[in-house]
Length: 173
Image (cartoon, rainbow, N blue to C red; front, side):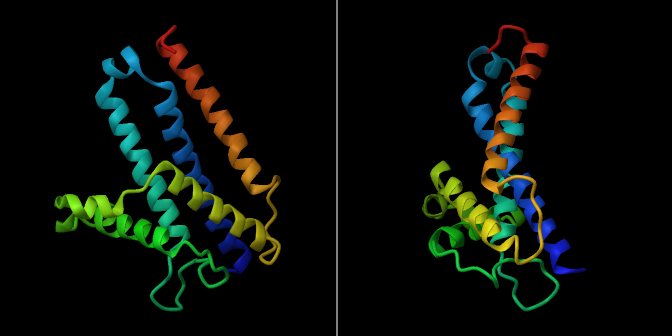
């Protein structure tokens, strides 16, 4: 596979992770009260799935392959800084999402791995900045500035969720 196609796969995977993060945020902002209480199991399952998905997608973006193999990674091309935050993200991926490590039963371990919404936003910012800086090197053409495109997509998701909820449960929002 050529580098341009590999980079495109990486960017599309990052975009999907950002969609999941944005939708999760929107649900937290827009869905509440009776609508949430009447369908609590549904909303909790959706939000947990979105959370796991965006954390996994972000972790894949920042992944450092164990060896120079066929893994698609920007790790070799860019120094992100924020190593502690990236390390926590990888631990979440490895110990909580991909595998069920016994340490997840320890409150101190969970507290050590805690990530705020601001931490996740920073990771997406670092990732999109890396894409912006590297895209011309890989001949990748994005119709819009990556960061701007992500924000536009978030607004589209917000509008579509509102339309869906109003169609299913008029007057809920």
